[in-house]
Image (tube, helix red, strand yellow):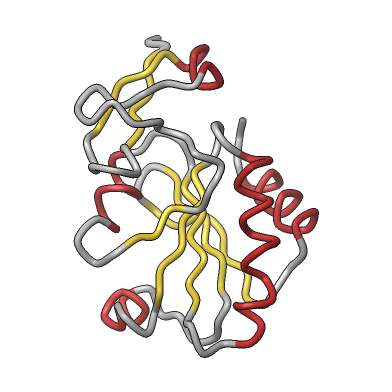
Length: 146
């Protein structure tokens, strides 16, 4: 079995192959040479959403949010702290459902914030409502196999 995993670059969306054992060593993108893990949630768009959830071999957690949502604003710093705690074994990302309404509709997002865990290109778990950093980390870890 190969020790290589695919990781999509947060800067240029290039797919990189990295040894699983080297994920924590600060790997850089082979195309743009920027850090693959920044400890920050990645802002997804309609243009790069599918690539990040389908081509990444590490789980991707997406926060479906909107700029006018009070609970979303309250959870944002907690989600950012969770990204620092969970990377590089998990990629945390955000999708503005106001700017990308078609994706919110496609994934049947009925309330925000909603967190969804994607693995192998498919959704494996979903949780609606704001959470604190420890709750986010615990919830994500309960749904991934690493």
